[in-house]
Amino acid sequence: MAQSEAMHGGRRQTRLPVGAIEKTLDVLIVERQRLHEQHSGGEPLEANRRAIMYWQRELAEARRAGRTSA
Image (tube, rainbow, N blue to C red; front, side, top):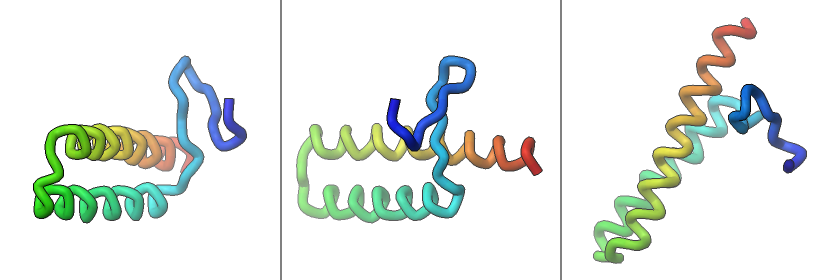
């Protein structure tokens, strides 16, 4: 397991702060727009979609953890 990861209830949780996750999502969304404009095809768009979904889940988890630890 990577040093930046912790296991909790069988689910890997990120230790990134909410702001860092939001910036990651911003970059992925800009990248998605670029992929659409360049007609990049299905594979890159699907990989981008999956990355966005992953980081949206991480953001929700980070926000949830922030509420319970405050």
